[in-house]
Image (cartoon, rainbow, N blue to C red; front, side, top):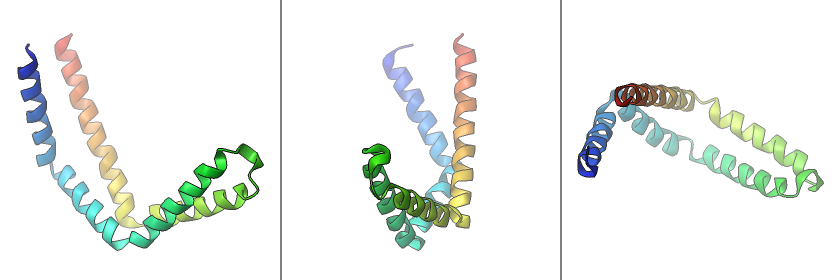
Length: 110
């Protein structure tokens, strides 16, 4: 099989995934989450950045405990939203679909 044929098949598969209802719902949920929970996302990202910076110093950073606590709080706050839960559920479902397809392709190529 030549390179162009493989490239065409990959494009065809990508378009197939984009046409899946799961993919379309993921895009809609991402847009909804970004708009509806902009403040929560910003607070989560700020807390994550502070924690990552503090972790570079190991347990020696004086604010590490408070940064961990704040990060956990912000993550729980964001990830407990129904739309976010649904987003990650669909994300896993789409990943499983893709993995299943790849396993099938792998078996065909053997």
